Structure formats: structure tokens, C-alpha cells
Length: 157
Image (cartoon, rainbow, N blue to C red):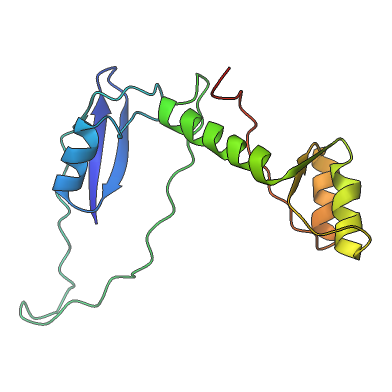
């Protein structure tokens, strides 16, 4: 994996991880790399400072350095006040279409139907609907797993 500092044509800076430099070039040329702030797909690599390790005091130059931890750092949280980047919006629209195609709508009865399924009083199946944050928290406390996704407008309007 390679880490690049990136910059869009609107001068927003951000970073990205890629399999190799060819993967970045191919993805950027196809418009698959977009700015998380404005959704711009005109993206270029930005100037980066090289990573230069420090030599431990007293260690021989030929002695191997201790292994670095292998777990990658968590990506920083990104909050945007503007519109969703086009690629993310498209992904969420496809996710909505799959949920609507494969799950039953239960509307505002979501929490109660999830409880009935959990207790075996109703057939276990995929459902979707509305739940308040308090209802979702109560379901989690009861050991009922639920997921929340942003419900964006359909792709077809």
C-alpha cells in the first residue's frame, strides 16, 4: 500500500491509500478518486515530505530496527457541510435500492417488529424502517443488532 497526499482542482488537500502508484493513476484517470470536501474528480498528487526514520541511540548502523506495528492507523473522521461527493451518493443510492429490493418496509414499527423477530414471534427477515435514536439504543441494549444508513433520494429521482 502507498499513501499519497492529494489535492483537488479546488485546492482542498486530503490523503488516500492505494495498492501502488499505477492504481492511483488508473483510478484518478477514470474519475474514481474524488475530493471528500467538494466531490471534484480532478485530483493530483501533492508534494509530500519523505518519511525518514530516526536511528536509535547506541544502535549499530547494521543492526536491524525493531519491527513497526502492522495495524494501520484509523482514518481521520471527515465532516462536510456541503453536498455528498458524487461517488458516495451513488454508493448510498445503490445501497438503498438493494435494501428496498431485498427487505420488507415496516415504517415507524421498525423497533417493535425487530423485537418480535428477536423473540421468535415473527419470521426472521430483512426489514427497514424508521427508529428514533432512543429506540435504536434500546434495541442495542436488548442485544438486537440494527444498522443505520443515510437514506438518500433514489437514483431515479
